[in-house]
Length: 163
Ligand code: PNS
Image (cartoon, rainbow, N blue to C red):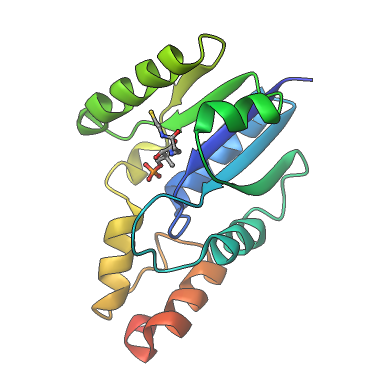
């Protein structure tokens, strides 16, 4: 049974994240999407809300579970008996941060491997940060997130997010 951990802030989950989850679920027996509790300082959604939104958005994958973790990722990976960590790489600009994090995690625990997966090219510009900004300013985010996330953004940000 090969288990992979897909950690992130997911504030909120985007179609780019969903694309990575779908790809990972074809390669591994079990994918654990792990929402970091101590990520962004002022998240739009609580960890529990982010978890629910992910669960609603991935309802069609039976080998994907969603969890919230806090503390060090490498410790969480051990607790879950994970075999690897997956991170999405959208563009070269992601590389430096991801490379640093992967090597630091390896330094903290030699057994934790990081694998990078590229989402579909049409999602290479997509980020939770931009989705939050567009929704806050009343733009249409329906091409970038699931209907459940779009609705949650509308509720959280008021009618402006529904355009
Ligand atoms: O979606 P993000 O914000 O890029 O995800 C970053 C995340 C949550 C994967 C990273 O901050 C993390 O692993 N946090 C847990 C704490 C930890 O282990 N920090 C050391 C990383 S080298």
